[in-house]
Amino acid sequence: MSLPQRVTLVEVGPRDGLQNESNTIDLSIKIQLISDLADAGLNVIEAGSFVNPKWVPQMADSDAVISGLQKKAGVRHAALTPNLKGFERALAAGADEVSMFAAASEDFSQKNINCSVNESLERFVPVISAASDAGLPVRGYVSCVLGCPYEGEVAREKVREVSTALLDMGCYEVALGDTIGTGTVGSMSRLLDCILADIPASQIAVHCHDTYGQALANILVALQHGITIIDSSVSGLGGCPYASGASGNVATEDVVYMLHGMGIDSGVDLKKLVIVGARVSRLLGRQSNSNAGRALLSENF
Ligand code: HMG
Ligand code: MG
Image 1 (cartoon, protein in one colour):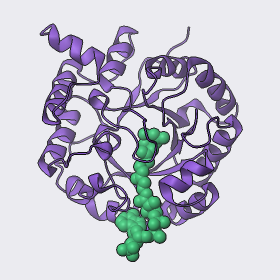
Image 2 (image 1 turned 30 degrees about the vertical axis):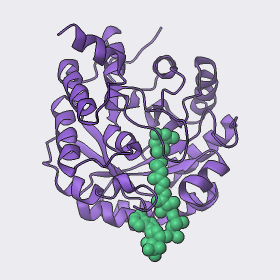
Image 3 (image 1 turned 135 degrees about the horizontal axis):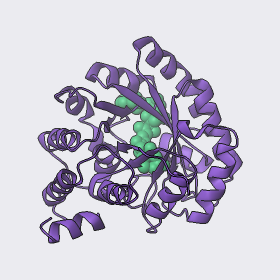
């Protein structure tokens, strides 16, 4: 079994996690969380989202979050930008990188960003051009790669087509989003066989929600396919406001525990990360969704 020696984790908790919180979260808590995650060794952190605040009120303060961060050397703070207006807000706030999000399913695209998949790709062209002028890297997302809450099964070829379009436009990598967490080792493996026939593994990340408890297994399959970029969310925070029933992303603590157990370097200090996860869970008034986090804490590691 060939596995990478090192993996880059993209921490999406402050965005994908907190965008789905029903309670309002203080600005200072968001800023502290992002700073603590960087201290634990996470150097790519999705810190906010510049979408319409009427659609996702939880991210309405992303301007203040990102402009309020104390930048640390070597840490990239990314933000979602669905259109030029979002990009301009992200640039003004001081984001280091922006992400555009498309879908492999028409119905999800309409519900999530109010346009068809092709229209969304057209909308991204001026955003990429503005990002390139400003020197900001652009990441692409494709949602619903292993199932859609409205359409059910999604064709692998459609995922490949949208991923290729994003890369051709100038995205430096594409994160494959299992938005509703229905993927399995079988479907993830078939999807990656199809995608990697055309796209190098170095340009693909996996973004697994853990609704059906399959995320770690699916990530292992991705590692076996040569993928080295994994999205995760501290203490498994999250969901998607336009995919009802979707639970959080795979917990970063669980991914780090698995990687270290396989001798793969993540650059993350697991002990520090578990403390960050426990703190944010306490502030949100709930138990952590990370199994490794809860187990390590109960052992007073
Ligand atoms: P729209 O209504 O079609 O946009 O929304 P519009 O261009 O017609 O503008 C309508 C109004 O929105 C205008 O204001 C604009 O100024 C305003 P009004 O004149 O009515 O007062 N507006 C904005 N305001 C602030 N920032 C902006 C912005 N854009 C327009 N950027 C839009 C289109 C994309 C904006 C909307 O559909 C939207 O905000 N959607 C957000 C959906 C979202 O955030 N979903 C969750 C993130 S995706 C996700 O979680 C999946 C992921 O994790 C991967 C996975 O798991 O699969 C990434
Ligand atoms: Mg997501």
